[in-house]
Image 1 (cartoon, rainbow, N blue to C red):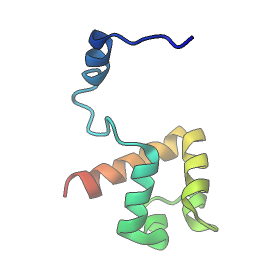
Image 2: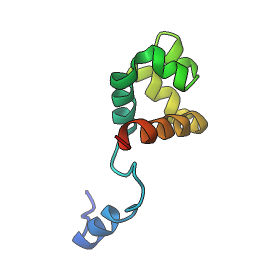
Image 3: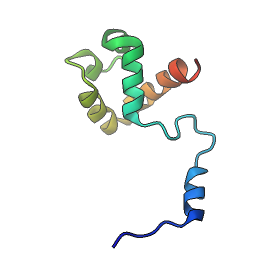
Image 4: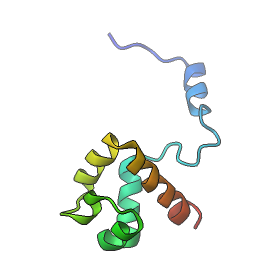
Length: 86
């Protein structure tokens, strides 16, 4: 049986990271927007990781970034510099 989530819990979850600029933005959204903005070649120049250089795709990039925290940090940082600040 599914557990019910109270209204107070939902409010607390929504306010859990009020100062995190990436709160509510998925990794898929980040990679997709960066790809649309830069394209794979320029993205690979900004973040030198193999998933952007060799046969790149959204799916393979997400798989790699979910397993590799240092690479995800670099991509999130680029997203904040490029997309969020504009």
